[in-house]
Length: 309
Length: 259
Ligand SMILES: Cc1cc2nc3c(=O)[nH]c(=O)nc-3n(C[C@H](O)[C@H](O)[C@H](O)COP(=O)(O)OP(=O)(O)OC[C@H]3O[C@@H](n4cnc5c(N)ncnc54)[C@H](O)[C@@H]3O)c2cc1C
Ligand SMILES: Cc1cc2nc3c(=O)[nH]c(=O)nc-3n(C[C@H](O)[C@H](O)[C@H](O)COP(=O)(O)O)c2cc1C
Ligand code: FES
Image 1 (cartoon, chains in turn cyan, green):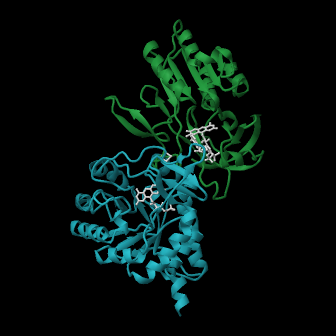
Image 2: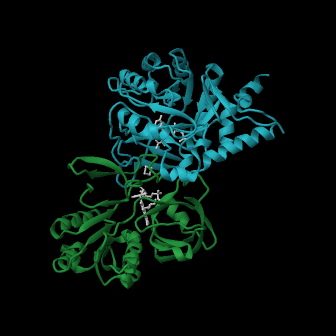
Image 3: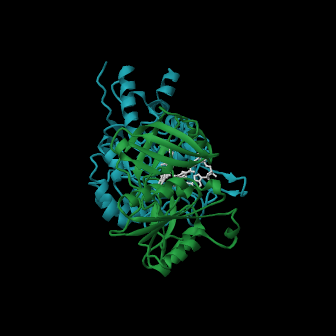
């Protein structure tokens, strides 16, 4: 059996292994630190941070549905100043790559937050743009509008020299096109997918369940959709993809890599099993070893590459 | 902690309500008022663990009990657990109840399943020589859950059920007020009803005890990661802000919560 080197190269970004938490689903808490050494993660990804303090959406924010979770958390944030002063020094303690997710109401807000984080390039390794939040003037999410997508990624590109990860929304007609725009505008990496917009209604009260009426669906229920989108995007856009959406075990993660993801992120599954990311790292390693591969990149997109020959 | 526990006993106390006893392999260090996320299934439907308060802590046996009401898919599946079955447990989580230093007398106020965390508290208080007075409310006499167990550790127990004629214009907290008029309570703890929570908050001002409420909310992670389990809490300055029930709570000073 060959020795497996789990290191992955995502454009300018090097990760010790291809597994990381999805933004907004993992906290650097005391309780979490007791469970495992966070340095075993390929990267740490922080919850999206905005320029100013925001409260987030009213309750209820969560509702479990068949094989999935609807969340209408919104983007509660302590704001970038608090992040830089309190959160960042704590996250920087973890001996792994740190990805900071940023969000905003406007193109300018994204650019400002990116600029404010630029001096911390020693601690922050990349910025992920949460483009699924709504734009204040147009009302639509950045990731669903071609012009906004382009303008935001370009503005961030001009504000930072850090690698940029554009996080795509699945709530679009043509995700391949959106990925292409993000790439042209200067994104180094694509991450996909964010949650699918959904809702639930309580038949007794005859009212929507979530305080915000609609929310984002994630978990096992969305896995086939995420997989299909990565399959299509990876065949036409030549920058690396961090794949996510319902990954719950190593098999799921390997499926995403075979579809074209160079690395994977795990969200809801960590709520179910807080050790799942470690199990996925180990599972990928034994899959690679067992099938005669030396590194994760050898299996990226194999499902379509092998099909073509 | 994230561990596998083993069922050592389960019984239905009244239809739709169960007491489940679990054994954990390591010292758990749980306190009354804390909770655990429990998953008794490997399926994706239900998907996530569910939060339950510690009903009874039995550290010398390496066990604890939860008392639960069947609500939906998760609790329905839990009713099928029998001795020897394994469940996943994440905990202990949350802050737990605080018994003020030097307290001599406390009161617990609970309605329905809100009794769940109160037995652990009352047992701990009684063990420490603190007098406990219990004020229990429920729809029917039958639904006064864990009444007998609580009575054992309480100096006095007062009950008021909706089917009693005097319940028409009284709350169990009115009984608390009558006792508080001539006995000093150092702390009062409430769970299971917004109405009782508001009543305890107003009595706190009048009688000068410290009031605490154990809050509930829908949870996904139980550990502060998902930002889902909010409740509204007033700060010192009177300004309202969201707090997380799992991490900042589940126990809050009663005068702070907006219910
Ligand atoms: C800190 C904490 C401690 C708890 N302790 C106990 C306990 O000791 N005993 C006990 O019986 N229950 C307790 N609960 C509530 C318990 O977690 C829920 O009843 C359980 O999650 C329901 O799961 P289910 O799969 O059966 O229902 P689901 O199918 O998930 O839901 C069924 C119905 O119940 C509602 N529901 C689900 N969760 C909650 C909730 N947290 N609050 C209000 N409504 C809810 C849903 O909206 C739905 O209408 C506690 C909750 C919290 C947050
Ligand atoms: C509770 C919750 C909060 C989330 N918060 C964010 C966020 O702040 N920023 C972001 O880009 N994505 C956020 N997401 C989306 C996830 O990062 C991820 O894209 C999505 O959940 C799909 O992965 P999963 O099915 O493995 O959970 C959140 C998801 C959940 C469930
Ligand atoms: S349940 Fe996730 S933050 Fe409280």
